[in-house]
Length: 623
Image 1 (cartoon, rainbow, N blue to C red):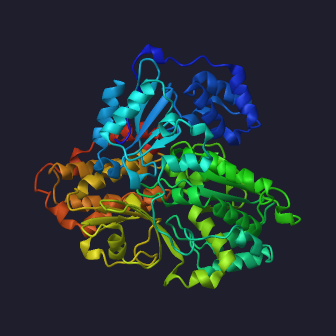
Image 2 (image 1 turned 180 degrees about the vertical axis):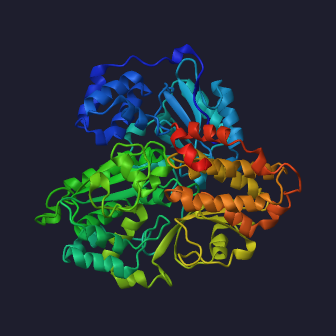
Image 3 (image 1 turned 180 degrees about the horizontal axis):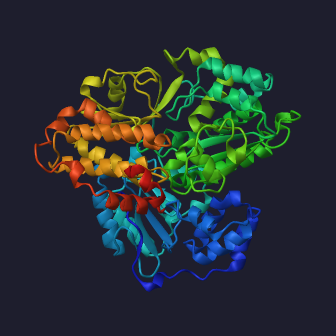
């Protein structure tokens, strides 16, 4: 498991005394709106370090919901807790890159200095120590979140110094600067996290004029804007690659009294961090792209869904929104145009990878557990609050703004075949120059390895765990939608790394992050993870290779959303590209993997991870 449950080790961590007036005021700050449930609970968590039964009761009364509904939200997100956390919560990034970069030594240093284990809270309620999945810092691992502060490039010595400083009374912010409060929002962000821009291309990371695309869009009708975006060949940059223009066109044509534009800033795929750089260095461009989309589809309201792990960026982004509103670039009569009204709010996530899926993201914005929605209808038909909704990611909106400035032909001419424009690649792992590279689509994997100093790679995972693992014989393949599609992650592994260790981590990640709604994903991935464990121990039978393929196919075919549909990819792509790894460890025996699984114990484990009772689904799966 990548994250352990919190163990409150002494009575000193009792639930803090709750002021009903405080909770009422928090609810009233959001208009007692049940759709702002995640904001309400985040504020209550920050105030009282947990979501206690008393808090849930008050919130339910204020918002007109049942206590069970409130608890359903509070128990879904990993950054919310039903038991008290420490005044300082230390969340250690636990992904495969951090592990290979020395995470174990860092963990040991924190545990020794704080005198608690991962998953525990100190007796005086001062500290909680826990694991969390990828926090988007793979280019500067190991990394940690300390409350709302991020610290990167950790070593055991640095971890000891941090722990001692915190015990002496320094705040997390003072770890970054003793003048933290005096720094600008951008200075705070860049003091915490390096951009590591290794190659700036012509579209996003090179020189960008202010609001040029928005100004030119004012001379066009909404239909003409959509035509430009569609003619450019722009496709969604989060991995799915759906035509952005087609998505906008459908949303615009859907009969409705309201429409919404949502920006998916929840890049949670391990190994992906390119949107982090855009949010830091091109936030105005992103909001400009959202504003152009709003004009194109007739939306008046937008939401930036910012992953909880990127809370250190919240002040910076809020400042951008406020600045643009004050400058007439958001709000009513944008740039003096009658009827062009559009405004944005920021919705913080709270630690749920599944919310990167657009339906789950919409559910989270609506104040619900972040569970995917049944499709059809699609968000462009009926999305946020039941209205047509455009959901694109940070990079897509930034590209849209540049297309409106430079023209569709300019963008279309870059790249190859059906992959147009440039792409931001997040390169990390066993290479000399990890970071973000803006390059045209169609580049060979070998070329980007040479640029990043990863020529000695034995394997590359393209697209993160849900993508494809390739070996040296495939390094001439191209990074494009018609070959190796990726949302941006390029993870480099040297010959010293154990392929099955990587696969086992990937499967543990998917088990942990499954929302638990559908049994094939919730239970099937537990079986796959255990199966890989058997291979690693040399206990697998040759026939179990076919079992892995069969179960993977079932999970892909019957899962409800993209997480389940792609979760077997680490196994399937390594079976295809590294078959000898499996065959060398599979030995004829009577003890086949199928016979070693106990379905009920597997379901129980998945049920605990998903924080829900699953018995209502079990009958269907067992038939």
